[in-house]
Image (cartoon, rainbow, N blue to C red; front, side):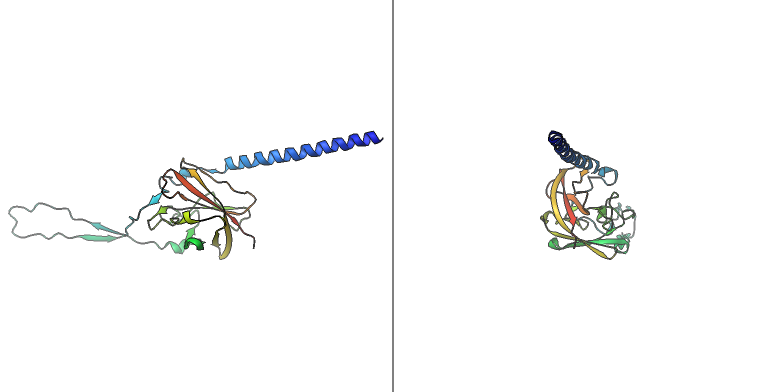
Length: 227
């Protein structure tokens, strides 16, 4: 009887050990699969060539230079030429903002639009990737991208100054969400962006070109803080 009991206990110990090892293995494989699935095919939405360090060259006023014409030889009077100035209509995008991104350590505070908005464009605003979910969804990932550089549309020009544990805030639908930078890494510009995050955590992902490096982009993974 005692021998049978010992055999049963031995079998149970072996079975439990097998279950633990199997669980660890499958969890590891699951995370690897999630990482592969979570590669964003960025070129389908916004050209990676556009997401770069942009210099300040966006003027709201276009000056139409007159074309110089040779004066007719028999002309009795000089015909004055005129320079006309055409002003572009400036769109107040703030009317369409659905939320604001605020990063105190780099003095950044700027709005973003709904991901379906026609103005959701990296050359106009902070870009909300279409695969994003907003922070009011549990375990969501809000993915924001913007230019670096010196242009007026380079909203992420100082993102390179961010450090691990820096605070990042998102205000969405008049509710504040507090994130903390947990991971910073680079990825090559090859038409995809690999998002490496904890899928059990509500996340904010920030993407911009790496400062002084045209071959890579930098990804900042921020996790929601439960307060």
